[in-house]
Amino acid sequence: MTIYIGPARNKEEMIAARDLAVKTFSPLTPNKTRDQITEFKDFLWNENGSLKLENIIVVASEDRVVGTVRLVFRNLYFGIDSYYCAGVSSVCIAEEYRGKKLSLSLMEATLEQAKLLGCEVVLLFARRALDHYYPKFGIWGLSSYNNIRVSMSSVTTAKRQTVTLKDVESSNLHAIQQWHALSYGNCFGYIERSYDYWQFLIEKFKCQSIAIKAICDDGNIIGYAVISDELIMELAFEPKENYDVMSIIGLLAGQKGFLDMQLPEKHPIVGELTSLDITVSHRECEYGGHMLGILNEKKVYRKFEDKLKRNAIKLGLKPLKERVDGLCWEWDGHDVTVQLTEPQKKLGVETTARLLGARLVSRYQNSYLAPCESVNFSSPDHF
Image (cartoon, rainbow, N blue to C red; front, side, top):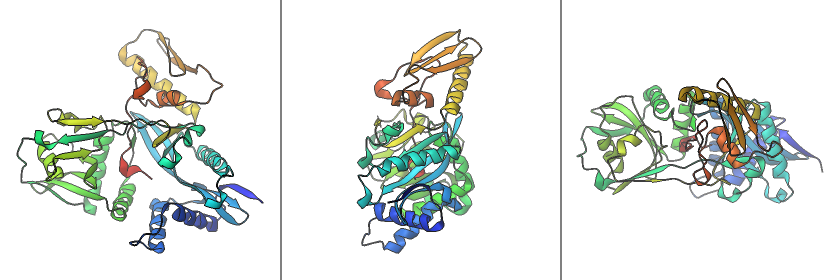
């Protein structure tokens, strides 16, 4: 039996890979036909015309595709540092070929292809069924999953009748793109969105029954909210201080006694909620969920050294050494050098998190030069 593992070699293999993903992840329902499901998968895979042979990794047995992975590409930000990121999606092996260790070879080929395409880090959103699987490739769950619940009994300000919601129109997209960047751009784990990507998201929301609503005050659009089953997945506003936050909270909550929002800790509205009764929750799961790995260690080390140097200069630090999370670095007053304490080992969760600046609450070690922050990925960016 001849097995090929690598980028799709022709359009037929790419179509077969799509069909395998549809069969694996999109079971038939009374409300959707196979053709409708396939059409939606085509839409997702060909995001803004991005579908290419090099982005689809396949396992082919003779002439049959029996495994696949789709690669998507994003610009991912941790603070001011940007990383070219490979998003891994639709990882699957045909049922009758499971248990033959093909998935290991498939993931190895996927990560190698991502490196060849210039990616520095890898991001994936793992299913619970694959908990504990991806860490063997150096991919770790680093997200904090920040959620805020507002008790509406603490919102005593009367809601202004001029604050309303309406459907988003195409003419609003440029403003929405700007507001998203302003509200989320300083948040750890921000994924940059182009205008074309926003157009793609709007269509994707329609297919997934996710609402995106324009927030208006006296008829003028001042922000937007992405809503799924009464959960506020995303919230952004224009950069001005005269909008009524309490009225917006009241409008979004409706008649409920609480309002749930997925908001990273640096989101500008978080500071507006300090006078309210709020419950802030975090979650940590290093072996699953929203997962990150380092592909180009050389580039990541260089960015890490640059960050440490910026921090040392900003703090006016004298020469010092620190040894934290499997790393040892030295600031001599001019430059920073970084080394692994055990260079023969693969990067573990603590070292990966520290290099990217992600805070692991359960095992966090303080550092003058390399403090960490909570990482959060906005739900609409899931692929």
